[in-house]
Length: 353
Ligand SMILES: Cc1cc2nc3c(=O)[nH]c(=O)nc-3n(C[C@H](O)[C@H](O)[C@H](O)COP(=O)(O)O)c2cc1C
Image 1 (cartoon, protein in one colour):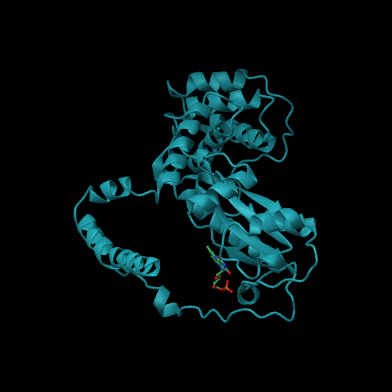
Image 2: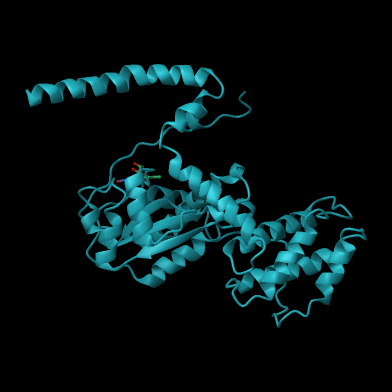
């Protein structure tokens, strides 16, 4: 009796999933506004919605509190915008007038704050602001801010080298296309590792390369949370799923965590994933050239796993895992999947409309 009931229930669930729900989706995608209504009744985006909103709120509050990370994100973004103004061709006589007041305000708050951990950021900001005020034309909105900046009794900062726009080294690189292609072919997702710890200096050197990756407005809204303690590694490696049957052999696992506090608007909500993904790729290449292999591990947006990861890493609600990575010295007896790649013609088009 119970078995029959179970079978009936399974068949009912199957019908809902394969027939009724797709019908609802078909209607929803045709009528503007209906997808919003649909997701009102679904928890699929619940955590993300809250995290984006919370990040935005904190970003706004941080503007008035130099001890908070959001103030540093604002300064990073604005100094980046100033540098773009400085290098633009032709350069306008007056630019950035609409945000220079806020920028100097947040700069002074951070520069005078003992809590600001990112002193290189302050030096970069100071140098770029100095350059900006040196070249910007007279303007009723800019001039009072210039006076405020100049009057600031700045703390001792090494004046050389000036952290301002420069011309890149034009000498040929030591790596060529063939070398890079060889590296790209060599890097494969390796899932079987030797029982051997990865020296931290190798990981750190790889992160030094990863942090040079591009990021939207240079905000660098991510961090690498490294676990190389065997017990903690196992604890974290078991959370994402997608690692069943091989997570027990990870000597080290990393969670790349994004911070939605970096943004004042929902429009940038995807940026942590783009920026974190770019950094992950550079990181993997930098590991590979040092003889260490790795494998990306998906971070699924599943509430129970989100909760476990948030607890394990003590994450703020505005912080979200972007992806995990396992790494280690490849077991030479282990294999990697062939993982056929699409052809150039499949993924490339020029001027296609
Ligand atoms: C975002 C992302 C998530 C991934 N998640 C997993 C995962 O959970 N488990 C796994 O074994 N491999 C995972 N991989 C590795 C892919 O399976 C692998 O990159 C792909 O099959 C291509 O193989 P290759 O990396 O050797 O070129 C992931 C890769 C990416 C980029």
